[in-house]
Image (tube, rainbow, N blue to C red; front, side, top):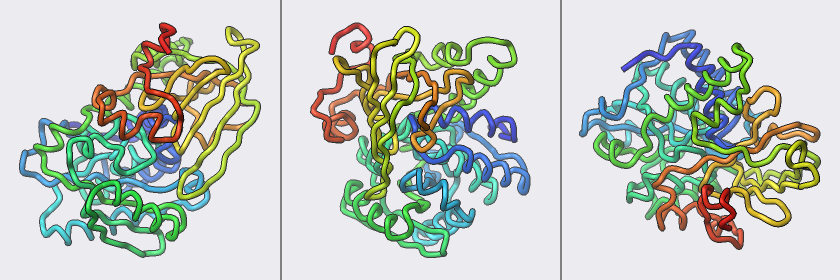
Length: 362
């Protein structure tokens, strides 16, 4: 166990935005909520999965909806508390700890704010190792863990408890409810015991996010290239350098969907990159080849600062470096690819691992 304070939160916010592959909510809003909670309630206890008792109840907390909505509809701060306490009352058992459901901009930080308010520890793990747009796209689902019972809550004070036949139905029903509740809600979801957390989650996600943020911060201080330092840390690869020339982005059915067009610069002069997203970046391709594809991670970094750019933060004229990172091995299984691979999202492509694409194997 260790304590998380303001500097750790600043670093985690940067790393979460990178691993969030463009989605997972606005890291700035999540960071402000976590910083305010630490200011008010003191440092947050962060524990490893090994420190969680096997029979303890752990409940991830998260935001659901289009990241573009949260830019205008900022959470009141009470939604997560309402959802958490409602689920605890429904289950009739005290919740031991919370954790992020994904490595996403806001979704890595909301559990920190909630834990500070409740005096609970946060487990250093998540269910994706990145961000994905749908509730069943977690390692828990791959291992047969149910998303429900779950609670949705909005800033107006509405809340709803869902019990569904499977996690795909949880996504469908919760998505419709989220749209009706203003495009974003907060959830308490995938209640599980400590033993399941150890077996099914991706470990040490918050530590990795913190290290990414620290690497970018220290690179600037030491006049190093922050992107180079991040790629060393994450086993990632630079895919394309260019300038955003066009963005087609719209919010529909509870998602931010679209495509960014990036005109090549430096070593990519004369090429064009097409970056497709649904909350998160899912496919990066040029006119003649695929560079990276879901479930592997695609992130857009500012060419000068190395800081991640979210899908809602992409702007015309932004000079950026698109990078690819290999997904956790759980996503490269048959069920992982079926759940969050390219064909699920409607791309007429088979999944090819990033390493093979880099070798020209697509």
